[in-house]
Image (cartoon, rainbow, N blue to C red; front, side, top):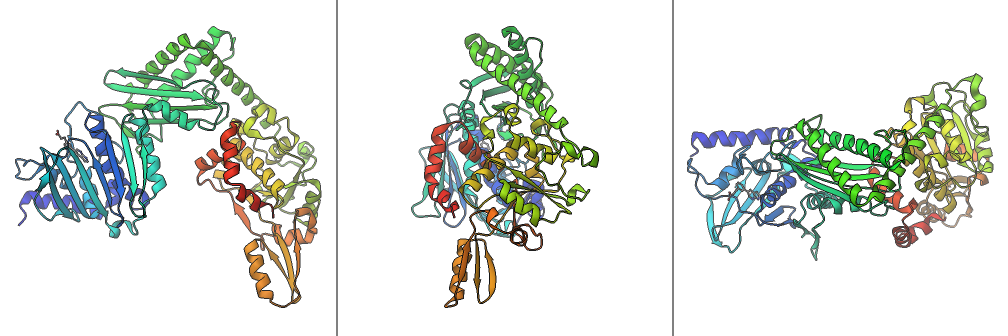
Length: 626
Ligand code: 0RA
């Protein structure tokens, strides 16, 4: 039944089914979504080649996915092997050379493995092609065609619709992550201005639908990155064709301290950077230094690569005919020529912008110069740092009750709000390995403050000194004096506020404490409930209700704790500090980006979104006030 050619082909797809990870990276949710990206990439390639400006992605009720585009449609005519182009595209591994030489396409890393891989890893797949005024259809099971390509009707447009049912033997339960799909498609529409994409979730009634379309391309993307932030100037953008490399760049500084620079090559997010990013950074540093001297802002000071990062949001997108991807995850652009091409494009763009709007550039340089001075201040703060050394204990903050243990890994630092709670904690602790640092009063809102000003706050200075690590770019985790940092604040609104400010400080200026899993929140109890001569510590409203129910008719004595200061040192030890009985909440690195957005919104200087958040979350805020 099969000729030699076909047997070879089936063996090819078999290899994909045997070792899916080799083709799509993994068989977890990432691999599953990769099937979807693979088909969408092909539709976007059509758009880039000038055919069709619309793609719809439908998650069907049975968890299959349909991707419909308005490109040329996969060719259906018979190939010299006697098989149709469609069948070849769906069954031959790396049936590349899709457009021949001379066009840009999404390929590299795990991308561009071809729709045949999607076919191999789907229990069923249906392809419908609209081309030459007709609609053609072919169905597959586990990569094997069930029929020939059949003409099933007329068509008055062109395009391709592929529906696939991922193989659960490969992926386990099929769970589409809508937020991931939205983020990816949104990104795709920023990188391809003029493309409209619609995502339909037909699993719910009524079906939900999201549409993305960005006329402004990278400029819109950078505006999105800086949404909720106070920006220093309008977005600066530049485009250039250098040889056969198409370069698009947009950038804008905000008044914050973090950097978000995204680099893409042929629509692929190059997370490990590469030559395009290096070219961008060198040109930006050099041009800002040159113009800064011209303007007299810098005199003979020099901005470093670090100085120009703070508050920078930018997107760099390059398209090239033969991208080379390197690095651990194949997301580092290797093409050497791109470095000088991007450098040249950005230098030209910045200089041209300077001629039109010198004040924008002036504001940027002033901001970078501020960062340079802040970095210097941070370096000085780090010099404040002392290792645990009995001779220099005097330089540690006076309020710190340090522990005896010398091995930092075994030590814990409790940061406690207020002196009275600090007193109980000092008495209640195990002084062998637990240190207490009471912080008084409100902590500065660091989201709106420079490192320089921050270090004028006594509370922040003593925390940084106690930790030993320094701060911001001067941060050095090897100097950390404790294995765990535990924030212990009251379970009320003020406590939550102080915890949020501390979290913001750490998130912005010592994020490594979070990523290394050393930051925790203590969980003090809300109530002490006694009945039948038994005492229960209760940590949530739900367990309080459950316990009161359980007590039934017994006489219940219920005491509500408002603040840590209301507990005796012994009570604080058993309920909150004793490693054997306490619960700690670990602050994790997960969703740092989401945290970032929330922090910026809650703590930043842009007012309207903050108000909206507080209004829409007012009920949540009220729940804190227990
Ligand atoms: C092979 C050749 C051509 C287009 C395609 C494949 C193609 C593949 C997919 C996958 C999803 N949508 C797609 N659209 C097109 C070029 C056809 C021509 O030269 O007419």
